[in-house]
Image 1 (cartoon, rainbow, N blue to C red):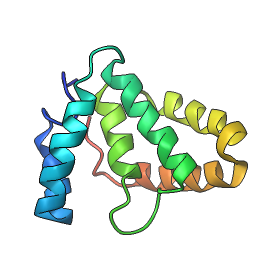
Image 2 (image 1 turned 180 degrees about the vertical axis):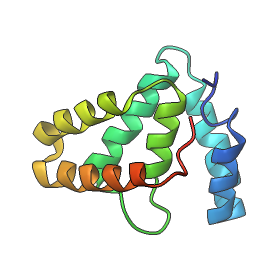
Image 3 (image 1 turned 30 degrees about the horizontal axis):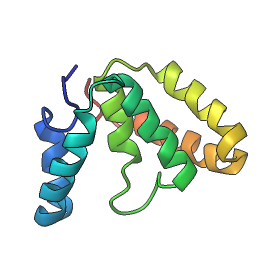
Image 4 (image 1 turned 30 degrees about the vertical axis):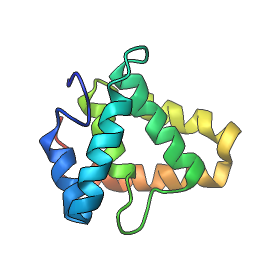
Length: 117
């Protein structure tokens, strides 16, 4: 687990920089500051980012943050079961179709060996 899931994770920073170096630098600074706020723990913040992905329907496409946010949540101690429960919860508040798409993408993510906790 990281004290700051953005500022302490070089893999996240490299991924952002690979999208675009200026974008990566900006996101690292701004998101790093938000992730450094003290009252909400890193695991909860990581789960919130997944909920936002569901609501915004950003689980697919170029530059999609969903897989990175799933990986970030796992690194912060979330389990696959917690992520699945979050997606079920989001069915009610974001819509069944949005959650269904995220379940499909989550299934694809776990078929790939790239997730390392």
